[in-house]
Length: 254
Ligand SMILES: [Fe+2]
Image (cartoon, protein in one colour):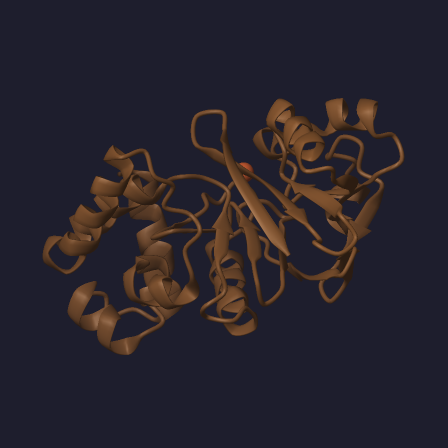
């Protein structure tokens, strides 16, 4: 399985996954279609699907142009978004436990509501596409869901996805997320923040991340760990879920 990641808009990421054996490929959350079409042509690939994590336009904005060019392909998103008809061109709805095959690649589906109610992720051992739910050192804003839903979606990601699997997040937010983390504990996050700062100065992508890193440096996940919650985040008088909610609130006003 190949994963090609490219930036779109101000800070979004788009992906093309392809099967080496069959040459079948799928686009994930495509906004920039010119790079998508070029990559397919250059690599002689056969597009069979678009996989959307959620309905926001910066993740689905390429669907119409792709449909115009490849009328036969499938457009996947959640059952919820299909019912609400809010992903353009969507043909198929997915629910937790469903699988999508792209040639020899099989992707599993989890429902991860919070950022939106129809948010899903696609994952296997080689890659996980988590949209706007989990970011490197952060998590998505709660546009539709509750803090409780988001907290449980993050737990689901941690419990189901291998901790070394590359996690492809929807946006390049790592540096600004670390600015927030540093406001919670500047010493603890200093080295990691500096490393990310230098990478961004060189215009490097800091996505993908993996769960191993997030367990250590993502405050929204660190609240699960008794020691980190107390010693690093100073939130020991709250339950993990309450601490998550406090942090999400703080970040919204940061
Ligand atoms: Fe979004």
